[in-house]
Length: 51
Image (cartoon, rainbow, N blue to C red; front, top):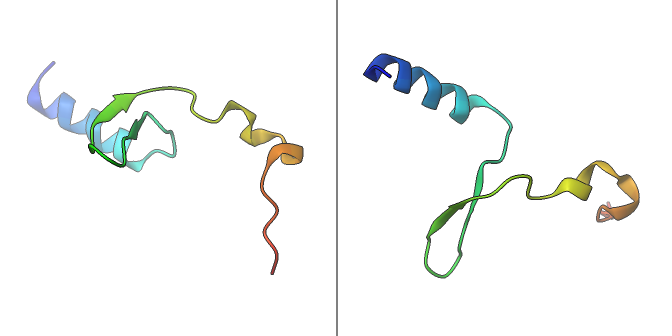
């Protein structure tokens, strides 16, 4: 893969709405994980926000 192809891929990933990993809040270590929240499409499991 050329440097231009890699840059294009990274820009597509940055601009996408897909989650590709998680950052540990204590160590700031990054881990690739997918899918993180498979249940989030079901409204019955989502948090209710009061206005």
